[in-house]
Length: 229
Image (cartoon, rainbow, N blue to C red; front, side):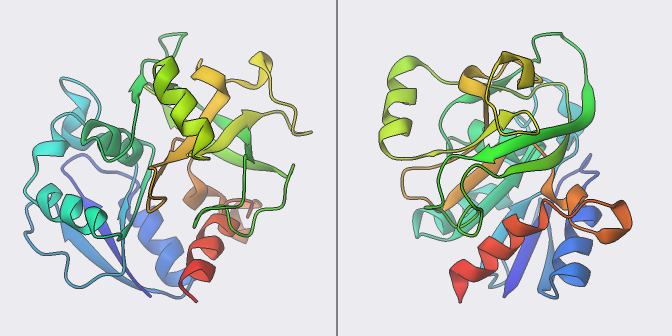
């Protein structure tokens, strides 16, 4: 499988993602610069974390106007798999490929720590192999990770099973104490109605290598590959 990792000025998790896809998952990986006008025949597009354009104005708000986004939008509209992590999630929301928005954390501080998340269903390409009620330890690192959507949008998302991950404690319990940033309904990851565009705030690529003593995030990449087999 051939993955394209989109890199913006300010991206700082791009090589973490490339390392996991290429060296851990043994996949073909192509770097896509934000000014490229071709996706180079990739099978999936990945938006890594970081601070695209320094997060000036608003996280992801400037990146959405980069030349490559026109190609990504067309790719997604044709059913291509697009996956954004952290700043990548913010960019996909700013581009309206995903519903809702990412707002400043309720404590108004940058948060960098391990969190636990639980898959709401296994009916998507990134949750396909995740067992029900399994709490995955995945780190976060963001200042604007508070997911928000209005009540009608949330209602539609629930009906379409678009809410993929929720923050929980290590035992899988979902509650306010397990919510690190104030996200509505403890939402940590979602997809679009067609289930081919995905976004999550926690960093699975930072929990996919035995050298880091945590491989809970690897199953997300394994799910993507299983979806293509």
